[in-house]
Image (cartoon, rainbow, N blue to C red; front, side, top):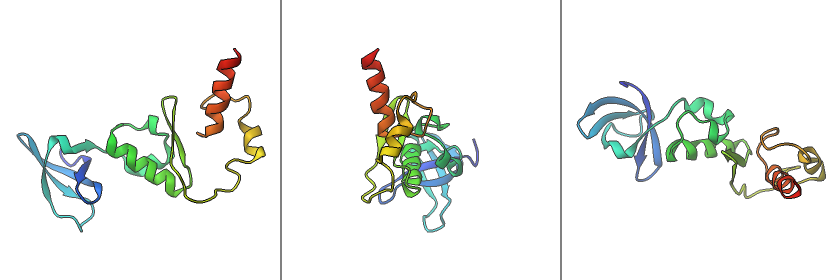
Length: 139
């Protein structure tokens, strides 16, 4: 567990990535990865396993090794920056408002692409949920 990557709750940033340095009873000594943050002692309730944050951009949220508030928010942020505004947690679609138009996101071509496909065959999208629901209703 020593030197394990963890997410640590931060009052200004939400969560920051750190390395677990030492366990001390109900707390742990952690070293933030970004040097602009000081070394700190945190309660265990404010520490979450991080897995490998570098790989989270390729994953759907439900595929994360550690599914917790911090890893989920980081995954959504990374996907958002890549204009991948949809992700799944099990069969629940999470969507983030991109505050801009994303070309072909809701085009007739995209509708046709998702029509008749099973949930999970194509990347997460509101059309995938709509067609999956329609399929269940028809059956």
